[in-house]
Image 1 (tube, rainbow, N blue to C red):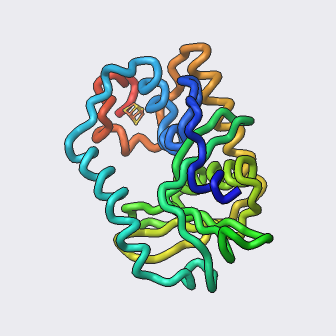
Image 2: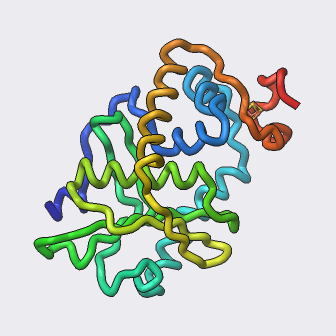
Amino acid sequence: MEERILHLIEEEIETWWLDVTDLKQYACCPRLIYYRYTWPTIRPLTLAMQAGKESHRAEAPLHEVRRSLRRYGLAEGERLFHQPLISRRLGLKGRVDLLIVSPSLAAPLREATIVEYKDSERQSQAHFMLQLAAYALMVEEELGLPIRGAFLYSLPLRQAEPVPLTRALRRRVETTVAAIRQSLQTERLPGPTAQQRRCPLCEFRRFCNDVV
Ligand code: SF4
């Protein structure tokens, strides 16, 4: 079991598998995923975006290892950073920022706490909550560990926000996966985001002529 957690999933990931970040992006705007998969060569990843991704990944473990687990309601636990996960049932793959197995990897009865870092100061953003719920389903399915808690950790604020993994949120993971697959299989352009204030800064703005 420990080996399975630490060295999880070296197997080939089929190209049709979705990534958990797809769910997060779909929640922001369904068209982002449509463009990504149907026009994979046009995505202009800016230098700023790339830098942001790298700093997010690099900073989190350094910041985390200096702190106790009390902010996650834990007295003890073993931290696994950037843990790969999959769900065969949903056809999902991803990498959670931090998986804490408590009380330890070697203990007979273990629970999992999952943490996702974010660069934002805003609380309870729906797309981050969806991402966490997807990781929770994957930990339960693939590792067989019950979820003790889930947190969004704001890097700017250095605060952990607990996220209730409700039945409705878990269900939303499944309906979002189904909606993405249907959109890609039918190759029909989804409707635009309901929050069109995002559009002027969107990298795909030039392809969406029906938004502000
Ligand atoms: S411009 Fe707006 S509607 Fe088009 S992909 Fe970007 S966020 Fe979505």
